[in-house]
Length: 80
Image (cartoon, rainbow, N blue to C red; front, side, top):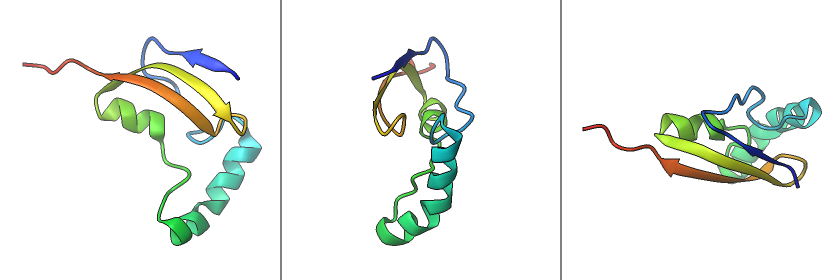
């Protein structure tokens, strides 16, 4: 299991996987998974979390290289 710790928002260039082959396969399969389950497998989870006001503190890669991740994030303090 590989882990990364972030002090700031991560640079998530591939969005799905750091492995270009896996990322390409998931992007190609996304229309099928949306049709079957309604879920996008190529969403930009890390970007979405930071845009929603969370600070990503730690990411652990759990399964399938880096597709299944455990993300520890905390809400940023609200501005008054």
